Amino acid sequence: MWQQIHINKRNSILLLLSMGLVLAALGYIIAAAIGGSPEAGWLGILIASAIWLIMTLVSFTSGDQILLASSRAAPVTPEVHPQLFNIVEEMKIAAGLPKMPKIYIINDPAPNAFATGRNPQNASVAVTAGLLTRLNRDELQGVIAHEVSHIVHRDILFVTLAGVLLGSVVLISQVFLRGMVYSSMSARRYSSRGSSRGGGGQALLMLLAVLLAILAPLFTQLLYFALSRRREYLADAGAARLTRYPEGLASALEKIAQQDIPMESANQVTAPMYIANPLRGKKYLNLYSTHPPIEQRIRILRNMSQGASLADYEQFYRSVTHKAGMIPQSALSKETVSIRPPSTEKTDPSSLNQIRAMGDLMRKVNGFKFLTCPCGVILKIPPNFPTGKAQCPHCGHVLSVS
Amino acid sequence: MGAIAVLLLIVLIGLILFLLAIIGIYNALVQLRNQADNAWSQIDVQLKRRHDLIPNLVETAKGYMKHERETFEKITEARSQAMGAKNVADAAKAENALTGALSKFMLVVENYPDLKANQNFLALQETLTSTENKIAFARQAYNDQVLLYNNKTQMFPSNIIAGMFGFRKRDSFEIGEAAQRETPKVSF
Image (cartoon, rainbow over all chains, first blue to last red; front, side, top):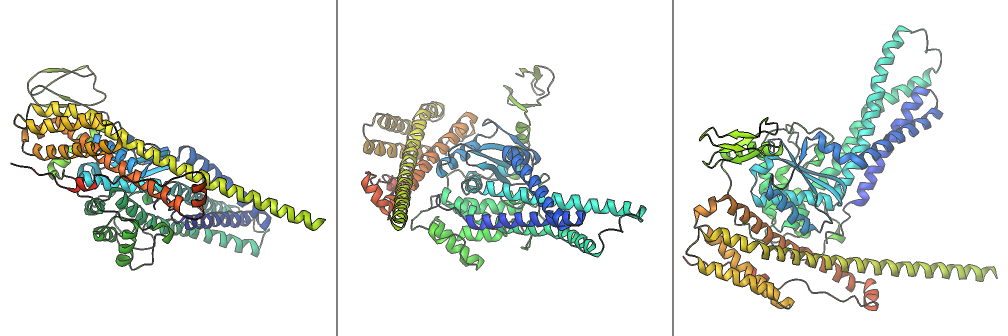
């Protein structure tokens, strides 16, 4: 049963602990190198912990807001895209979420989506305008189910915690390395001072600190990405089970993979949150991949013709990736989950209509008003339109902008 | 003397742990039962939403579909039957009839391009599709919850607590699954 999956909870805790250890080690060595004594190292751990604590507190109180703002996601009302709200509510019901997630639209032509928040009561889902205009109903449902699975699996909390740790390590390393460059410049000017105390021991510590400051961020990133890849598979499995229709997500992923536009507002830290890697370019699987290869994800979902249970996903995960099991045995209950037929509505708009629809959607997100003149012309009024009246350019009819 | 005191302490601690375990299992059972109840009420909410939606839908479509009186009559009749149902079995039957009538209606709509171009109708159609989905997903969520609850009432050791406090096995919502899979026949 999937409510019981505290998926990889132990792995996640181990991972967070090891990231925390890296942070502590970094703090210790840097402080010991600067202070010139091992005692100063303990102060370093204290400072590193304080930085981490402050960042964690900030991210717990307003982390989702910061992420949404930095991704340029705008909160929207149901009138902007009623279907999106309907589908999110459908998935909320299917997953038994206690509350409707808040819905955001990102004005970006690249198709992508992510979920954030710290628990199911305070969750948000953001999708791009490009995604909304390219996918049909079943596909959009698959993507939303994937995001809702992230919420149910508590991946959003994990990503927040891991992101903060990664951010702290990067911050401390950067400050130290930049400080080193400055101090070495000034040390050249006052070379008579400073070399008298410390000696060989401190030089060695300094070398170690520089090495660690360079390696620690890379190492923490590897840890972060390794687990985020696994979580993508798990969210796919959850989505198939929620929608009872694996083909929806498979075909959505296919459409997302076809688009090669990188997202403008995504970066290294936020990349693992998205349903597909928003930073394209390196498509091969390496240690730095935030996401599993999209072709494999599609193949697993397409193989699921017999049922949509977690056990079905697990079976094809093994045959496609040739890896050991991903979902713990205790979570695989014997249940038959039959696949539902596709929805009857399958009109894929033509590419020209898609572009037009995307433009209209972006305008709606930005607060444009849409007025229909009796002659059939639709007037798109910007939010800062100065006067209360607008004249139709086609028939001359005057419409009131209210 | 000392040995007896230690023994008593161990027994006492054991007893407290035992009681805590029972309380924990009991609370878990109550939580699961409440979740199942909540999932059940979700189905009702969605069914009610569908009842409210139908008059609007029929009113919008009527003007375009002059030759489909029979379809509309069936929908209206199924709706009033579903709303007037007295017990759960009747309600399930009537709701399934309504689902059938609505999906047939959606197929007939394909023959009326004018209607499909109507913005108002398109919005209603999306609402109807979504409501149908919400009903299906609410049932699915209810069944998931019931499975969890039933597992808990049947597995050791929680089955003992469940027996003591009268947590009974629940039925999942299976009625009408067969009727749903049947594709509605359309005569042209």
